[in-house]
Length: 480
Ligand code: ACM
Ligand code: ZN
Image 1 (cartoon, rainbow, N blue to C red):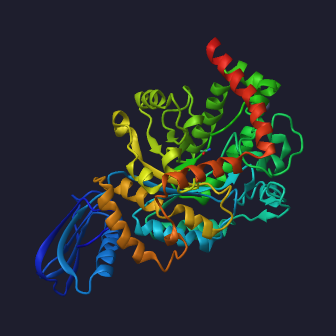
Image 2: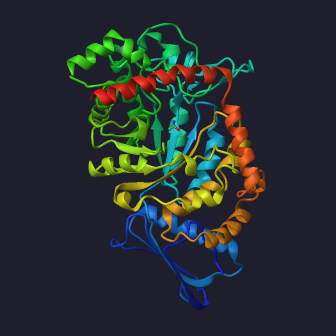
Image 3: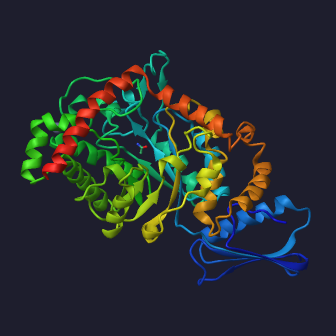
């Protein structure tokens, strides 16, 4: 019995022994990423319509060959369910070397994942060299301490290293989608160039986690130009169709008080600060369009006035989620799904067990708007690559299976996972020790410890201040 992961659309066993021929045949009628792999008495034949399909056929053949001493006769017909199959690694909170990233990218390729979402900037570090603004990496890539530990965390990727990752991914048919988070999660940029904020005061690269109230000023032309300049360099470095603009967790406390922001709202008749964020993001979407790129935005950064071409990455689940999804689907918006209770792999295995990740169902009403699925690995509490692998695997396997396969049989997945785990044991000796479905009690304990760890003094203090932001936003909504 062959166990292929992700599961092919169809796999039919034949009889006899596989012959010695090896042919690849162009079949333009096959889907872009699809393939047909035929092992029969003549030999091996790969049918494909693009190089991507040929690559995936070879991955499947590798998995078959690794499981048998002699190849069995079999025909595999395959194509992915979703065109977008992603994995995000946060390299801002902690820094990972090019070699460490390449190791994960190799696994992505084996799992037929095709988008590497590279989270490069955040409050706690700016990790991408930008020639026009050297302080971003001179100052913004260095954090003196993290939650009082007085240990320096630093690092950034040079243009040459970006190219190395981009090429490494391209060889594996993986698109690299860089994320430059704005207007929120912007403290490292503000620490480098204080005038980017509304108040212009000097700031440090953040030494705590959670939401930060100092965000990019949407009123100052200088800030808008800075963001556009950064995106121009990003567009040159990354050949991807998409650039991720973040847009998540952007409290508006500074914007309420800022003359420049108020003037911008008046000038463009913007009803509230959410609409101002929409205006700001639209400026970036238009700039990206002029560079031949499209934008992705996290769902809490999506407003009514946001350009329809911006893809929404859905992470933040709430009681109004389904309504929000329906509204955006009604606007024709494309979506990527990363619901945080299911696809956030930095959450403890007890809180988000493998089974929970696997059994997530995209709401059927909006299925046609969904481009695909993405697993994310935030690294606030992931200081090194061993912890990264411990958290990512095997949940990324479940994500990959869901993003490619049409079947969603968990029992069948577990059988296939076992075989695949053996296949990668030497690469991830730590990750294979993970208990992916801890007991109920262990789950509760993991969850409690996770939240207790997050709630330090600084975070609680800021959370209190942010309650005011929520109250003002609610009042604005009622008035509107
Ligand atoms: C997010 O988790 N703030 C996108
Ligand atoms: Zn402002």
